[in-house]
Length: 347
Image (cartoon, rainbow, N blue to C red; front, side, top):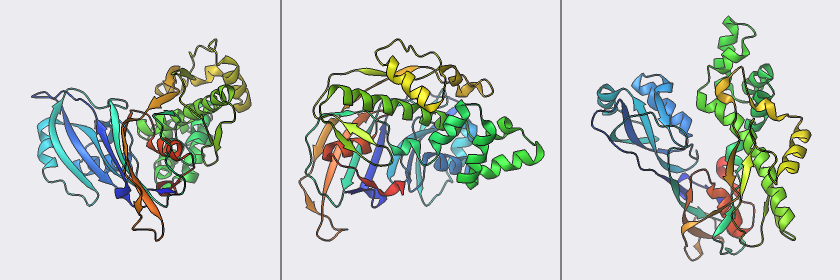
């Protein structure tokens, strides 16, 4: 079973209510991209505008191998609007919507709408309205959690080493800094966009949360379905009542019902709770929050199975639904078919 065979198989549209004003300093743009990450798209936009990357903001990261529509803000007012009139790109389309008072930041959206074509179908669709709210592999990539853990542990030299090893483009910026300032690993890391550094530590925090959710499901469900893959997940066999699970942070209340599970996981990871205060890079300090363990699929519909024109002898199905911000459509697909999927975009 495959998704993202071609970018047009995975359409994502961001839903948000941004109040426009007449003379705001930040220009609000509707960005449509195909075949690149949100960060690369915003960097391309910043490079064209000849404006610092930190003057651009967005509310959510969107899949690379997909067609996605989301909001972006750029500081600069009328001057930026004039430059945008000349913007041309093979993989990006933009529409200027007006002005907003502040830079967009992660989380400033309501939900995401999805239209997904699932190809090479095997099992039948399972009708479900509630799914476990796991973070999926897009959150973790291949090394985000490793780098995030190193940052939490204060092993900044090892974090830089891993970034250089696994991401030459980012690594070049870090090495250039270290050439002039030997052993200034914190300074090197700060050459990366704030959103990227936050992504690393949030990925590690999310991995710990996924482990707690799996243990929670296993504790209340007899013989749950287990899916193997880059991010092993445990599926419930029916709808479950709403519950919030803590996201571990320096101030998390571990007197909650999930205390023993988190304490065991932290011991296994060789991490202490106070290490989630990152004094050398304060904005990476992680507070304890909470996340819904299960979420609803809104406005769900599925087409009848039909011939998969890209794979002879196979069938496909078109799914449409909405999810609240922070929830993963790929998890929904896995749950609906109770099967791991090959996400071509993650290869």
